[in-house]
Amino acid sequence: MLQRLFQIDKPFAMLVGVVGLFESQERFEMFRDNPFEIMYLNRRVAYFKDYAEQKPSLNPPFSSVYVCHNMLPERIVFEEIEKR
Image 1 (tube, rainbow, N blue to C red):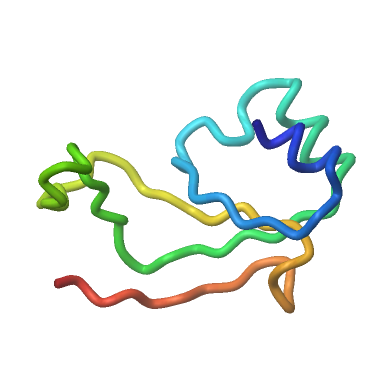
Image 2 (cartoon, one colour; image 1 turned 180 degrees about the vertical axis):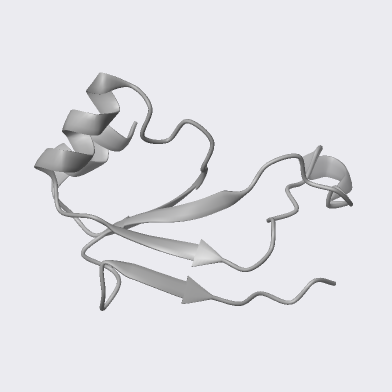
């Protein structure tokens, strides 16, 4: 999915799990060969388990980051989100 977004070469922001993001050789090469930015968040994002009952998970099991292309002013941005 990310490779296709880089190929289109339009600005994008995609929220993805950080675990394993750079671990494969294919992904390493993709990120090495394409300009991108990362937005790190101070908390874990609470995803919905079911869109019909939009109740966020209380203890998200993994951290997420925004992988962006031509969206952020710097290569790495740190943002704070409030927990509700």
